[in-house]
Image (cartoon, rainbow, N blue to C red):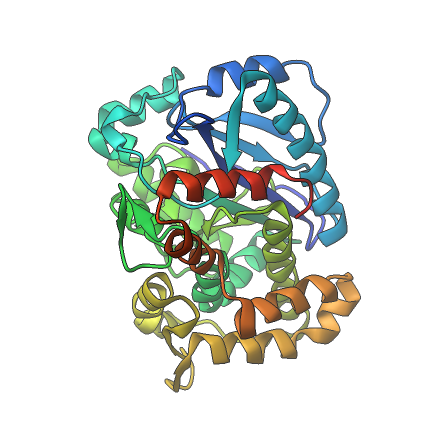
Amino acid sequence: MSLGPFSQSDALSIGIELELQIVSRHNYDLMPCAPDLLRLLEGRKLPGLVTPEMTESMIELSTGICTGYENALAQLGEIQGALVEAANRLDVGLAGGGTHPFQHWAQQRIFDKPRFLQLSELYGYLSKQFTVFGQHVHLGCPSADEALYTLHCLSRFIPHFIALSASSPYVQGEDTGFHSARLNSVFAFPLSGRAPFVLTWDDFERYFEKMTATGVVKSMKDFYWDIRPKPEYGTIEVRVMDTPLTITKAARIAAYIQTLGRFIQTERPYTPQDDDYLVYTFNRFQACRFGFDGTFVDPATREHRTLREDLVRTLVKLETHAMALKSDTALRELLADVSARGNDAQWIRETFAREKHLPEVVRQQCGRWMESLR
């Protein structure tokens, strides 16, 4: 099976996908209302799409092609408005967060769609455990080889994206000790982790052909890599983020990825090599477990510093690129998160420490997501 051509896209264009929790407004547990929400949105003209996800207590929104931060935020806001209107009609809540704090996976229903049913048959209980909620960001690349170069350069920053978006400290009523416990569920899948180290599209096509010849994969959708090429869109897709608690945070993280893309594609600051991945899994774990306080090992110099220190250095270094993209305000807000405010996982823990009741935490999460542009 062939991958087909790498499509044309506008360099540095972005697209955002967000998986959302659908919850009862009575007990704030997950509620299988995705089919009803989708029916209410049929025929509604939106700048993007709203589609089902693996289980019926999830929904995914996706923007269209966005030029930058303000455009992405505007599209997210319009889709958010339509979703909130539909949710209010059904008397259900919508929330961000990478995991629902106290739902039990065995109670979830697989959405009645052929691909989801096939995945359920293949992966068994992992499919219902995959009731976790992530943000994906597509970044436009001018060519296939440039996409692979950008992918491997961006891999250095995977811990940044995890720590900035982390919003999944609780699983099935327990504090996991992680900032992002969601990624532990993703890592259980056999085709997760990092993409293979190839730097030309010809080599990538050969790899894909070998994998399809084994019968293990049929399409790029079968790879759950942290970053994967999307040749049909002409993009690479960054997939490690938890769904933030607000659309504003989601747009800021997408702006950060776009700004890093500009830095990488214009300055060519790195020469990717396979040895860069020697510390990849360690850095990824540190971000999931400890957030900004995790240890970061520089892939090039092997220097150790905190993830907070590396994020601050990077955000400051990117200022001129952020100004060129008109995302400097968004990156300054992320810098404030890193320096003082903390991430969404910290907000969830602080809210629980104050309220002592996880349903109340979810109620407040709904309030944050469903209130416009908070």
